[in-house]
Image 1 (spheres, helix red, strand yellow):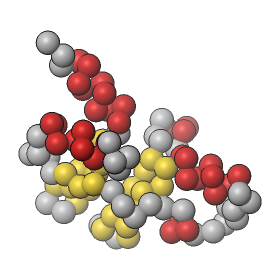
Image 2: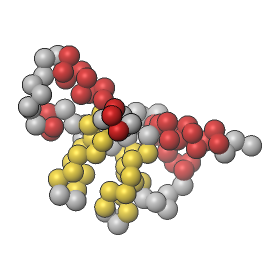
Image 3: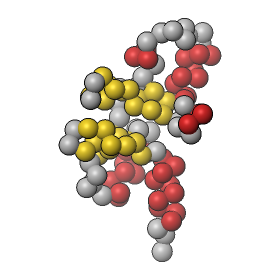
Image 4: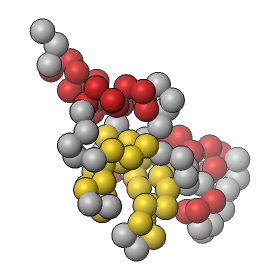
Length: 96
């Protein structure tokens, strides 16, 4: 994750998003003695928010206050992940 600059990545089952793995959950799993050969499904989060490319940026804050990862799906296919940092960067660049 960190080597590529990601704090979270989606877990796909074919084209369907099955969950999210983030560095916090991965670290907690390993610190608690988790087996590195365990399936990803043991640590992935299955609660996340979904938006479409046409949705307004203003709707994102409600997801981040609930500590949800936001996935962008375009016609049902994963198009991207929006992080809290992405949102903060966008808002700070667009302040009046």
